[in-house]
Length: 324
Image 1 (cartoon, rainbow, N blue to C red):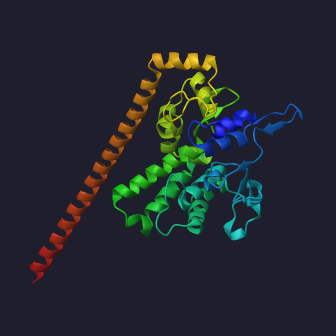
Image 2 (image 1 turned 90 degrees about the horizontal axis):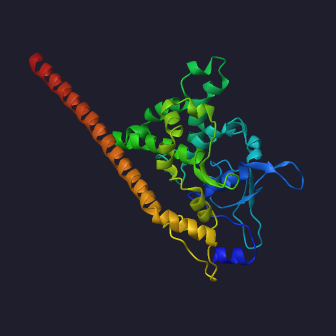
């Protein structure tokens, strides 16, 4: 109904292929030459959303908590420099900001017990400080993400978790970073679905993360499969359901353009839907196998620790018996 209303009133719109926050971030951060001013202008100047994940996605201007009279709270990325000194965010890189938001809790990953925004700020500031302020060559420094993860592993809140849950949290942390920094979006400029390319030097210094984001197959397994341009355009126009992959008509009887309908039918006849669904299922199976392997490895490590602890206790008991 909403899309039909937009079409009836000639209101421009687009449907995101996966995460809407990510698509909005692309629109808000991609600049093109304005036909009227001849200056570079963002594709959209303002995002209206109540989803706080718009902040780690890097959207510069967000209007939230709007009421019936269209009043709300305006978030400006540029205002971060005005925060109190003990909670400074002005010097935070985009990578630091994302880590801070993930630690404090986001849609992709819940925060650890007793880890709120204050502790999250402290962890990130400490982990990234040397990398951004040292005069030493950066290749000689410990990657900030490694320092952050090592610090988290040393905390009581992490140690009280089983080893598998610890490793799962850190693994999901990396996957969340990928979702925020390299999501799959639709580009009106190229007319295709793309992986957003962001050069976060401080994050890329950590080899496991660098390997993830430089492998398109891994990124798509996390953020979503890229489809052919014609199908991607049909999704963005609301004629192809991004979830079911079915061709849809408008609620007011509007029909998809004939050229799109033809290309869609050829794609389906060529096994396009089946192939995409198979890829998606394969990704799910691979993730399930990855988690199972991680659990087995963690269980084996914990079992070995228990064995060593039992042997140590038995030796101590034997020594006490001998002394008696």
